[in-house]
Image (cartoon, rainbow, N blue to C red; front, side, top):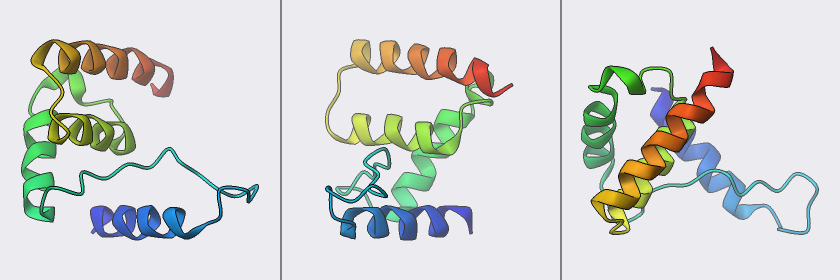
Length: 90
């Protein structure tokens, strides 16, 4: 259910004019993947205990980078960055 809300917010954010003070470009979505594939990738991401505190918005950014063809090294560095950023949410 949360993922459906995220998808709606993503599409809404794309419809807002970039010149608008309400525009947001932090939401990403792996457009080459079906929703079921995104869910599977998120399950895989969160199966690693260290990723537990990572907010879903950041986890979807990771899945998006993976879907765009990021290398294992790039993904590893990005994942470490996400884990570090997530420390502030504890």
